[in-house]
Image (cartoon, rainbow, N blue to C red; front, top):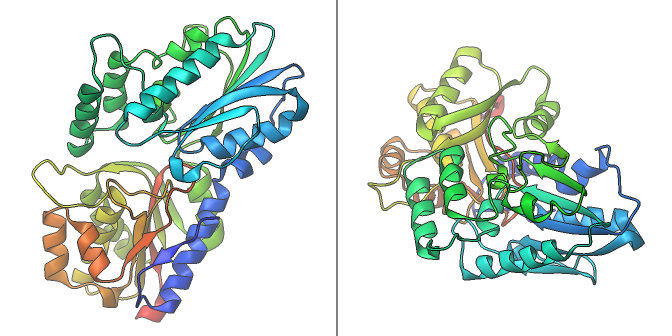
Length: 381
């Protein structure tokens, strides 16, 4: 479990509440937990592992342990901070996110060569999770790394959806849109396991659909974007908790809507989804969880409501371009004027740091939906 780092001076009671909810959530969507609870059929022949995305290490380790002496080898692409030994015959390579780098291209090339070398009589397990689009970077002839980086940056800063971004990535690169599946066509016993970071769990969008050929191998979704994390929080908080999943659109608008829901019902409410931030005209730093959380807290404060706490959590441990995974805000922490200014300039990280609200975990080894919740807290009133 990741070490959760709070700001100095945060109320210990608020910190304890946030820590408990974050730990419970991350435990519920850890790859190992999900695979333990899934009905996985392990091949009974020599087997190879290919894995990429933010959950690749946990997924690959689980399959390596399950395969035991049937494991021939494999290639795993992962965030550098998460890399640990998996198996002597499994190669682990560092890859970057959200913008691919030259080492991503080199890592993807090694994965390609390995995939092509798998004997036709062997089995192959492919583990895919969010972040895999950046990791598995293989430009088409004539497309430069700089073009891919600039396109990714432009789409991310404009508030585009992951579907819109990945549609462009598929045009620029060779291993997306079924490209990896084509390389493995000679290996009929190929099985694909996915953790979704995509609203609606569109299997062709997760990591840009590298295995989505016309006659693709079996695809097993071990965690949908909207299910386990929100359900785990509801179990922790009580069955009367209101849960709304599939939340998309502007983070500030959705944060205000969350506040309105709480003011209307007086009940702990969870929003789960993937909101966006348009920062083209701003030099600020923040992310959708922090924007939604601050917008929600400001709306509650302006309504003179005091019995609440607002928690925002990006389950991968990184909220937008910041090093924070989200924030925890209580009524006494927020001041209206600087909060409004931070939202107007999309500079939520600096403001939330200044009031002691930001939370940091580092990369968590999973990647599903973002969560923003407003907690009924009578001790604040």
